[in-house]
Amino acid sequence: MEFIYTLDGAGWALGSIKINSQEAYFSPSYLSDALYILLKSLISVTPDLTPFPVKQATFEWMEEPGGTVWTLERADSKHLNVKISSYEDMYSKKELVTDLNETCLYIEFIQAVIIALDLILQKHGVDGYKEKWINHEFPMKQYLLLKEFIVKASH
Image (cartoon, rainbow, N blue to C red; front, side, top):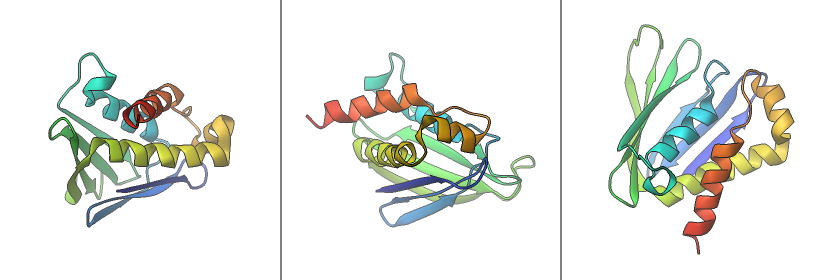
């Protein structure tokens, strides 16, 4: 399980995710609050983190003009299915292609995301993130909730 997410210029990020043998690449723009949406969706499907968990959360990352659609779904109490599809053009929903559709351990997915966010904070800090990401603040509340979950789960 590998999740890479780096800020790349003003309002752009580059990243990839690898689960088992499948890998997908993405480059969300500031048009969507990518990290906040990811973390919020992850929290919403994790029963230990919300009083009213959902079985599935779907969200979009705008990539101008294309984008990716993510679906996070609870497979069971320990596993998460991650599906990422990409569009050539998000507005017309032209040419949907599934880039990744794999199941992994919840804890491994959350750990990989937290590691990537730790690296962003080390490199840019909260103020540097806002400066690079333009329209959105670093999702500190959601990050800390997931980080605490990881610490508790590993004890």
